[in-house]
Length: 73
Image 1 (tube, rainbow, N blue to C red):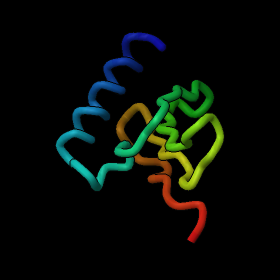
Image 2 (tube, one colour):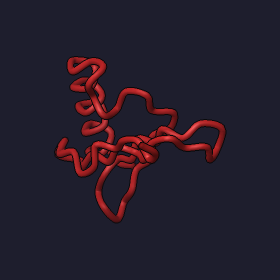
Image 3 (cartoon, rainbow, N blue to C red):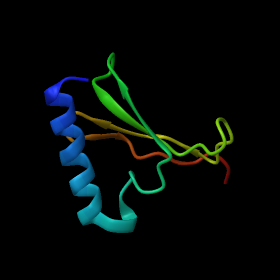
Image 4 (tube, rainbow, N blue to C red):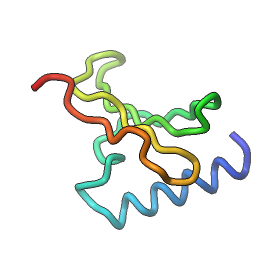
């Protein structure tokens, strides 16, 4: 990641802190940067592979591309 991506991640995390429990970032175990999509993937899988939710995907500009959510339901 470069400086722009780090600044975008900080802005996304600050917004998540303000939003509180309703934020798609809450519950994340791992954050990855997807260079092809220009987006952060907030992974909610536990124990390296056990997943009950698909990850939230948030673009550099803060747009929520996928809020994530339950896989089972």
